[in-house]
Length: 193
View 1 (cartoon, rainbow, N blue to C red):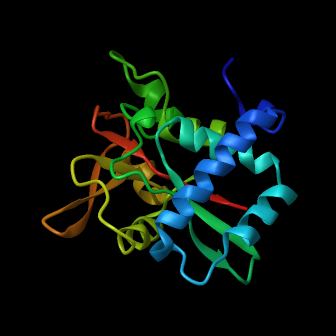
View 2: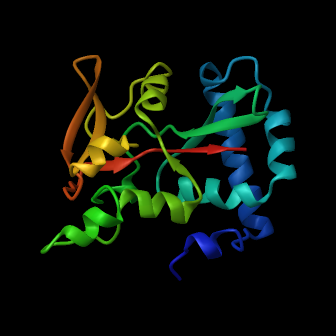
């Protein structure tokens, strides 16, 4: 079944799936304490227990290879922030063009979907350039791949889209036609809980 924005919130994990997901998230949290200093897993899990609908999105992040982890807490909004922390762009989200308009504009060799459509179906947001750079402060990501990032409307209106990667110990921001897609380019997502 293709999950749409309308059906996404109806998705529920089984008890076993929930337990397995929480066990994996806790292990990743404890293994990577440098990503979330001064935060406690018990508080994160309590928040997830209050918002079980977010578990489905986290499971989708996990299922597609994103390896989601807590990267911060926004006091003003009172939310924990999860990013995809896989070493390379999530494998299950590669070979996608930027958005629906780009997908429809392709005449031949259309990918299955677009990055924005996939993010929406998963209930997550694509990282912005600022968020991507913040992630790169926590480790070295996308050394062999690249990731689409949320593109300003003025650039998108002209047919472009932005992506980032890390090469030569530097984070680069590039542009491409939004309709392009590559097997080594996916996208990273964020989820607020």
